[in-house]
Length: 199
Image 1 (cartoon, rainbow, N blue to C red):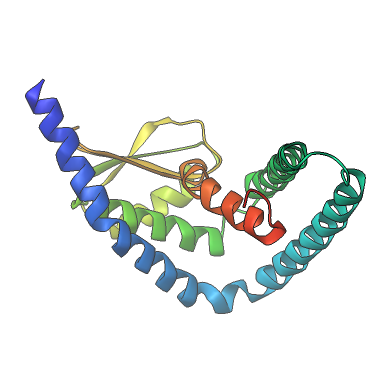
Image 2 (tube, rainbow, N blue to C red; image 1 turned 90 degrees about the vertical axis):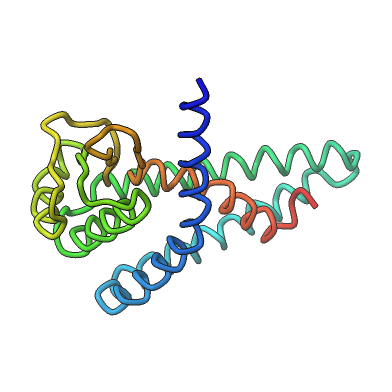
């Protein structure tokens, strides 16, 4: 029991210690990839602007409908609409991710995910798990990580990787699904702030 607690504390320390490094690495990765992503970014920016514009129009309609209601009732309705909008945005984003071409930029993403995950665990002697769609891309990327191997077992995820140290003591989930889950609270907060909801 004490061993599990010590192991959990060690893992927590590793995650906490490397969180800032990961964020910095992600920022650098995004900056390095910017040139190759310009076409995608402009399309996503247009989509984002459209979503924001549509969201503002919807928020204006909702505001007019709820004038005269109690402050608590207004706040609750806004929160429900915000959650519905966030759910729609995530659903659309997940569909786009699921249908992403598994070459070029995606291959760079897999390399970044592997690099981050091995740095977090502090070893390249890992077993890597991925979904069926990503097996070839991940296998190709593993050539740069000596001591790593691709598991014959697949996992159910949109994309990305889950790695385990070969001794089985450490695991890091760097799937797209896990990354989205980690970002959801921040995205919700930013959207709520944009629309002045929940203040």
